[in-house]
Image (cartoon, rainbow, N blue to C red):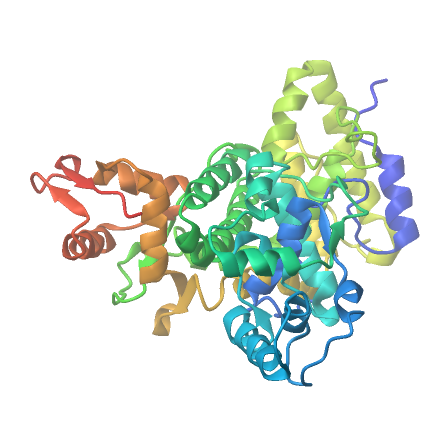
Length: 473
């Protein structure tokens, strides 16, 4: 008899844990089931952990704190640490230089990265270390995937001005990470992350703009990545994991109506918000079916791939009819095993035997949804709203929250879409869609008017194919 699904392992795991657990599968999102809302408005504080993961470095504050150099209790330790490498004629010069560095390098207690290497020095509060650390690991594992070109952006201390050179030379407290190459998250949208990498590498050619735009662009990609997973999981075996599905955004300054695509229940944020409560049971259902004989451990570790419904269904069919029948039998049995778990109290739930694997996947998901606390599912899914809040979501009266694009981000999205050669206006909107952003005809009209005013539109005629958008950078 063919062994397909590792039912015994799953049953033993869940009985022992007496809780839902993803077993050996790699994680796919950094969300917590105990929603904290801390990511709201604080996304940039994740960047330090993200960049250190990319560069395989870690921050050692003791190396800075051990230096005996105190000008005043109000000075930043990093400013004093840098100042300690300079010779002064008198104490007043010392004080003035430290004060200058405080203003030049810091916004209150937060460092202002005046050079890409300084992203490595963005600290996380101890109380946020677990949650923000997960985001940092997730972002490096999924968005960058050990891309050496991106690593070189943040690992390079070269500078074209003397002050920045002095600051970078004086800094230490960064050392090689002890947890290099430990993969925790799996990338499920490889084409989407490839576009992110191309965008970041393009922006890195423009240093000043890169320093201000890199955090915003990264924030968007993380948010849209999570939105796409919600959308794809809802499609079960029909999901196309190779390409993103564009979702409708509204411009920050335009008015809304019920006829607008951004307020639609199927094409905008309303759909994502409604389905976000399904994210937790989807992740666990897919984790269950990923424990199968086609899935081997990753790179000499105990971890296995997280295989989405559509990908797994294709793999099963490739194995032939006999394997497909065996898998269907095993998943039907696993559904019964799951319902019989003592701690779930689902004895009264009865389901019919699925006739096909796609049907079985949906039955398993529905059983997991039934077996998951409503509060847990709601809190876990609610992380998506916290991630997009203040930047990519906006409340529009009776229409609720919609996907939102501010002026600054529209120009950034245009810059990375056009890059250094002018492209037709219609091609620009297609580039937006590759990045997950769709606009209805009303928003497109607003965008054309804005581009015209900014003189970045070559208008041969009113036809979209006869209008060209110039490079911005």
